[in-house]
Structure formats: C-alpha cells, structure tokens
Image (cartoon, rainbow, N blue to C red; front, top):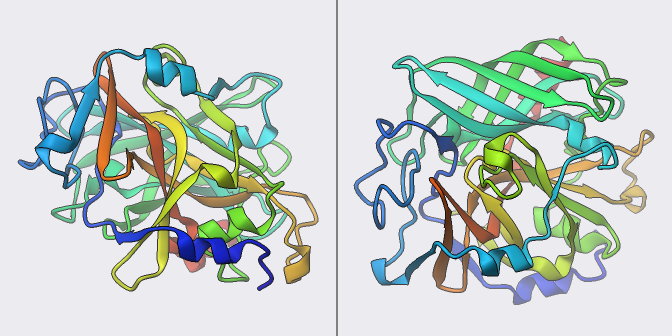
Length: 330
C-alpha cells in the first residue's frame, strides 16, 4: 500500500485501551454506572463503565469558555454535506421505562447499494465491562434529510460486540439510495483507520454525532459536525490486545450522546484499485467516547452532560462485513 505519510504512524504513541467509557446520554439516574466511576455522579451521568484513570488526573470544568473557543462544530443545515443525512439520532427505551439517546450511521459495503443497516456504539446497548446486554424495549433511528424529509424507523439489534464496543442494527425496509446515500464501508483492503486519514492529506474528514450540549447540540436535538479535521488533528493511535490499530483519538469536541456517531472521509482510493463510482463518503469508524490529552482526562460539564476536546473513534475494521452484506442483500 503506497502511503506517502504512513511512516508517521510509527511515531505515534500506541497504547492499550483497557476500558471504554460510555457517553450515551441517559436521562434517568436509575441507570447506574460501575463502581469505578470517577467523581460525582451528579457531575457525570454515564451508563456503564468508567475510564480507568487516577482520580487526581480527572479535571472537570464547568466553565465552557475554553472549549467554546476551540469548538469547530457546526449545526447541520441545508448547506451541510449530504452525507450527514446518513447520521441519525438513536432513541432507546428500556423495559423499566428509562430512556437513552445515542447516534447511528446508515452504512453499506457495496457502492450504490440502498441500505437498512445502522452502525452504532456497543455501550449504548450493553455494559462493556460486564459484557451484559441491556433489557431494551425498543430502539428508533431518526434523521431529517437536507430536503426536510423526516425519517423514523424502528431498529433491531443484529450484532452486539461489547469487547470491541460496536453494534450493528437493522430497520425493516431499506432506505432508497436516492433518498439517503449510505456511508461506504470499504472492506476490499485492510486499511487501518489512521491509514485512511494519512492516505491523502487533502482528504475531507468529518466527525458527526448528536451531542447533548445545550449551546450547539441543543440537548441532542441537532446534529453537530466538525468538517475541518485534518491528519494534524490525529493525537494518537490506540491498539487492542493483538497490537492492531483499532481506534484513534483526534482533536474535536464531542459531548454525551455523540456515541455511535461517525468519523467519515472523502478520499480517492483509485490507486488501490478501489472503485467508488458514486463518489460515496467512506466510513472510517464509530465515535465511542470523549477522550483525553496526554495522560490526563479533561472534561467539560454542560448541565447534566459531559464533553471533551478529544474524541475517540473505533475502527470500521471492528465491524463484521458479512453481517452488513447479509442485511443489505435482503
């Protein structure tokens, strides 16, 4: 694989991601976090396991002036990239009556294919520490296209991998390609997510999710996105136990509720003999949590939600292409 900047990857710090924090937005306190949660439960309301960090390294800021200055996110509008129609809000209703919200992306593994497959974060539907699935009553995916058409579809959880913190869900009917162009899951070549970013430094990279901050995300009602990400914003790579690049952290703002959102890229892979006749945007990975800077974790509290200026994306390689093709071929 010819990557002009691939040698830079070896210079990044690689470390093991032992435990992933959940950052879906849960609006009921009866969804208890694990005993390892750092800080005050009234300060950070999360669903499952907490970041394994030292108490002294956690700094929660209630003053949002700093994060607002560096926040490049925009609210989705009629002038936003069309691919953002594929990123919807996921509403989850639990059997006990509690509710939660995450994000989810319509994806396809074949160019030009209509899709009914949604990719999201595993911790929205189960506990990544205990590996137990939540008792869920129903799941709904909602998006509004640039043309103003609102689409809402009930989802079925098809594949839940709590080790890799990802989930694949399906709706009953495919959304026509002409209505929403799915993000393209590329499985012909074994690209690492960082390879995708370094492949062409002029590639357009977008992170999008339904953050629940009130100053831009409007409490999760508005899709926010950052379309000014470059390879220079890549902070470090995260490796799994087999030392494969499985996640990346990058400099962009996200808040609770963005979990399951998308890291997307517009790039040309024709040199790799990859055909993309419809010029679809590629799906790099799933947003799974707010992250940290160096050895420290920085959090910003906005009412009952928490955010960060660093975000982690789980590699698209963690998804099962056979399931995606099976669902979309039906």
